[in-house]
Length: 137
Ligand code: GDP
Image (tube, rainbow, N blue to C red; front, side, top):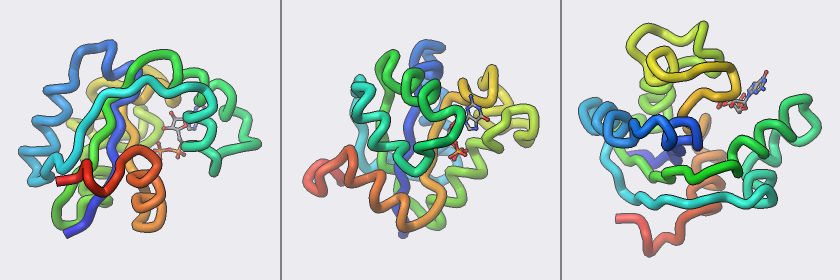
């Protein structure tokens, strides 16, 4: 069993496709172990994406992530990190496999609907950034 952090980004929440995205996770065998809606401040978004500090898209990305509410989830399952990334599709939706969330719903490289942890150490950091252990079931 592995855990990963999933975020439905502000563009996904605005599109009203939260249920559709969760259905894809559940159908693929992932379980929602924790879930909540939140509206990040710019500072919280900056801390979350600190790994990208200095990149040309950092300011725009953290503006975007704090412009509206998101849905935060801990997903649990076998190989959850890789499976979630597979369901999401490539960062650039133009390169995402057909049938992936980003291929179906993203509108730009930035407005790409979902976030998913990319490795065990980042998953651990990202889950603890938003959830207490007592909120995960
Ligand atoms: P991810 O792990 O697939 O989300 O991709 P990254 O960790 O590389 O990037 C984090 C997020 O930054 C992406 O999901 C996009 O929303 C955004 N992003 C990545 N590359 C670019 C870019 O070249 N331009 C812009 N505007 N945003 C980007």
